[in-house]
Length: 281
Image: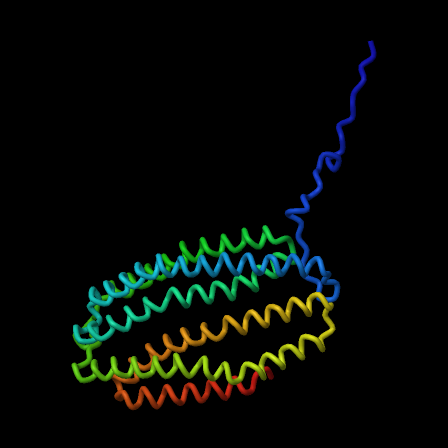
């Protein structure tokens, strides 16, 4: 009786080829094709929409919780006096109202860029999946880390009575007036300054794109992203400027009066305009 043995198949013979849906390649600036452009733009649109809606949803759902925790932590804190707590509360509430718009705009802008890269490197569905994961992080760990930070600050104990921060009623009024004035100035002047300088910035960026040695499809994609960024930048600057002015104006107002808040807000907008006029370098 003859016993025959069958040689086992080589390991490579049973390996499956990677699915096209999961294939990955890094963007090659000079070998970027029209197909890559189509995938990138589709991924950008998908991710921008998903993360924009996700950012708005996160803001609407999570902002009330964060605002509640911030107000609760302010009043629970033994490091702050009652007048300072009363002054901070309306500032926190105002910031909480503006937060959903900020998260929506940031999510849209980030999603468009992230989606373009992911879509071009892999495919639009991968860009959509990545955007969903980003939204989950926004809803989950990011929000919880803010809440945990607020609670940690609220639990601190002053070592001596002198460690408690407090202001008087006059300073409280000055802080609130300064916050309102600076938020208005920065919220209006920042986007107006950007709108004034945007044609120059956009024109220079476009010129640099088309003078570069990257492939034509990537030039087209870069131009589309630059155009989309210009649209998102104006409202983002308005919300961001108002929130910056709100906090900075409250601080300057209670320390040195509303006139100082207004003066500093005007100076910061002048510096902002000067920096924009020098862009791009």
